[in-house]
Length: 121
Image (cartoon, rainbow, N blue to C red):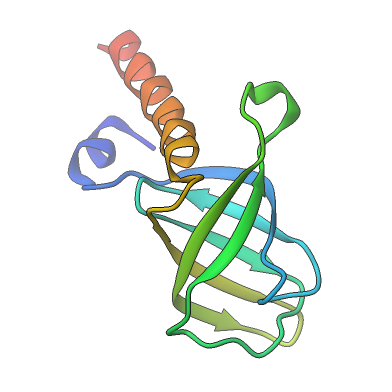
C-alpha cells in the first residue's frame, strides 16, 4: 500500500496469510487473507449453512515467527461471495477477549507501514 492510499483510508488493510478456524461456519480451516482494525477477510474451501446475523467464534493462528500467540475472536459476517469451490467472507471483529491481541497484531502492521513511509520521505 502506498503512502497516499495509507493516508486516505480510515482503516488500512494489510495482506496476510494466516490459518483461521470458525467451526460453526466451516468444518475446514480457512485462510485469513487481509486484516484491518475493524475486520478481516477469510477464504474457506467450503462452508456450512450459516446465519449472516449471528456472531461466531474464530481462532486465528499467526505465523510462528511473529511473536504473537493464537487468539480467539468474536466475529460477525458482513458480506459473502460464494463460488463452486470456495466462500469468501468479510467479518467485522467484535470486542471479545482476543480483540486486544488482534488489535496489537494489526498495530504491528501499521507501525511497519509508518516506518517504511518515513524511510521514503
